[in-house]
Length: 195
Image (tube, rainbow, N blue to C red):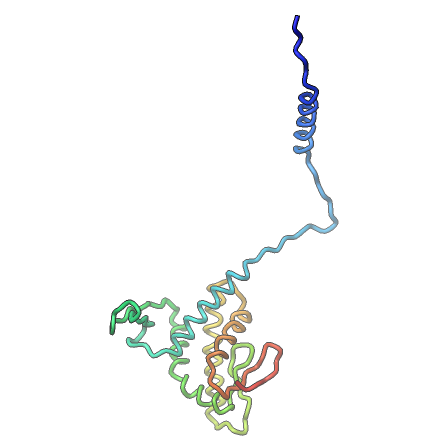
């Protein structure tokens, strides 16, 4: 009679596998006095969308469009010499009006910035920094520009689920980059320098 030999590894493996499965299904609970909170926010994504919207609006303000009411994109790089494609903007009426007013006063604003009378602060607003060199119209210009910027910032912030302050800071960076030489610029730390 032939009795098969038992492999001693096989029963040990079966016992180990059973033990592992039972422990793997065990429930573990952790009790804490305060609930554990996980705060996951997609700040990078929001930042990118805000920055894109700010860039689009600032490009509209600083460019000279070929047709009224639409941003223009040149097709020159595609081999087309004089054709333009219109990119429709779907901004609310108040935002569109604020963009048009900013565009209309841009050259006067740049002139005062280049003279060092008006500066770009860290909150995305213009600020009168040299009252002695300003005439009576400058204070009104600053007020109007800041009102229109605030309208635009509120729209971009609401569209992207961001704060108005965060949107204004992102805008400040772009506007300061575009400012002419001689413009007083406020750093995030609050110091004023001349560009």
